[in-house]
Image 1 (cartoon, rainbow over the protein chains, first blue to last red):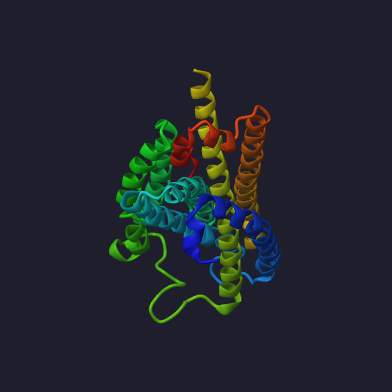
Image 2 (image 1 turned 90 degrees about the vertical axis):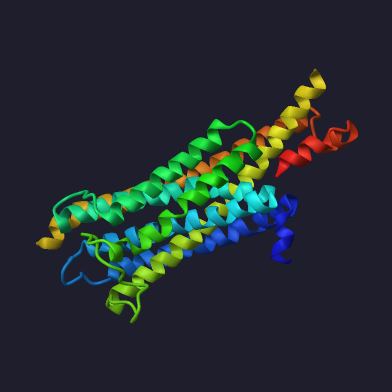
Amino acid sequence: MAIVDLANPTRFLRFANATIPWLGGVAVIAFAFAVNQALLAPDDYQQGAAVKIMFIHVPSAWLGMLGWGVMTIAALGTLVWRHPLADVTAKAAATIGAAFTFLCLVTGSLWGRPMWGTYWVWDARLTSVLVLFLLYLGVIALWRAVEDPSRAARAAAILTLVGAIDLPIIKFSVEWWNTLHQGASVFRLGGPSIDPSILTPLLVMTAAFTLLFATLLIAAMRNEILRRRVRALLLMQASAAS
Amino acid sequence: MEGVNHLGFIIAAYAAAVAVIGGLTAWVLLDYRAQRHHLLELESKGVTRRSAARSGMMMEEVKEEA
């Protein structure tokens, strides 16, 4: 099946029903392996055992940004092609992305207290991630505030495109400003600066989180398609009754 | 001793991850069940996509369904 065929909601539902159990199963196995790797990882020479928080914090940060990236592509699909499945994707990704961004902020604070001596500092990286979380809440509020799904999708798409400016700010904040948050240590010129004994579990956990994200996104998209079918049938029922 | 001092923060971080991931998974599963329930309820009342086509009201659904 070509990817373009999935743009039909009925075909997407068939794809989702077939994919979710397998993808979910692979995600669970990946998590079991990743947690085992994380438990076996040695303590960092500076951070001690607190480095284990990084195994959750870094994947959460990645998925928080990935979620907005997915929404940005979907926003283009909404505004340029007016494709309803793009609306569905954007709406489904918003809640999931918000949840992972929230987890990133919470785990970052829990790591910051023993390492920096504070739960929070108004540093450029932390603040730009907080802005991303607030943007997610704004988009979710927009979806809930506008009754008509296609009007809500256009409004949310515009906010999403404007908010996409925050993604490069988050990525490069540690280079553009003098931040307490450390610089890039995985995706950087010259390769990762992390020891393989810690980098491997980190990458395995990131893969497990990404598989979970994909499973949840497809499942949430399926729910949204069904919700729109229910809405359409209720409208039909109301118009038939009047 | 340093590692033990950080144990509370590590447990709190992993507990937060379990809560967020568990909450997300529960939200998706419960929402799926609710939407399936609504659809079956409407179908049992005779409101179906097929009946929509017969009554000439398919256009609205086609606009809304996806």
